[in-house]
Length: 262
Image 1 (cartoon, helix red, strand yellow):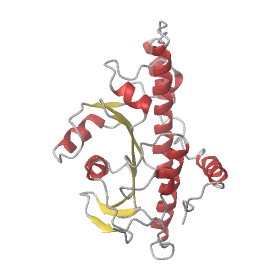
Image 2 (cartoon, helix red, strand yellow; image 1 turned 180 degrees about the vertical axis):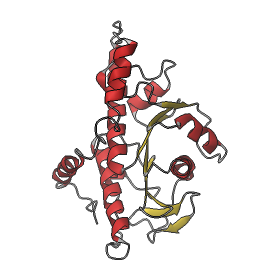
Image 3 (cartoon, one colour; image 1 turned 90 degrees about the vertical axis):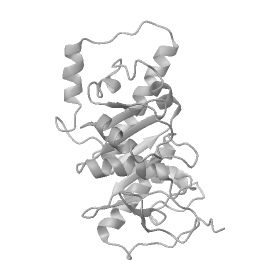
């Protein structure tokens, strides 16, 4: 079996747009690891290659901290592999069932993220869902979808319900499962996931204290949520991204892993 993790660089062998997408997506995987939102080799982040109907996804078997621009797999929205490194690693079927459905239905979405974090799973199992109890969570007030658990996402028919439950939103809680975010760019999807994760962590901590929770009025919730929409102020994640890359590069210098942009 061939499970090497040193993959020849594809720089110069793919279009500039594809290479840039590969670098940004690999950086996103590394940042998710850096911020403690990984689940061993599981979960996925997909990105659409600009000007094409193809997506990039991780090899099923690599840690997020091992992923590089050249190790990503090119697939279509139905999960058919267009090209991948010379390795026995493949892709996880549920990756394209969930992600492919959203990419196919939402032309405005160029990146989809899915996580199984401790706090995200905890909130996904709560009947109350995400509470608008903090400024971070109020961002999602009436701007988040919920999808009932149907088992591991391998049934193609589930795609219809996934898309319907997400609706026009950029975030969704997969009940009894985890979190999902999407966006017009990799940067936006990452920022939304970071904020959703922080909201879930705050909720778990606050509910564990067993103190009475103070929820702002519906008028304040609506006003605040409106102000935090990317169409109201700015596309969140874009301004933050260069700083995130600097943090990633500084944090990666002591790690014995291939550079994300290789």
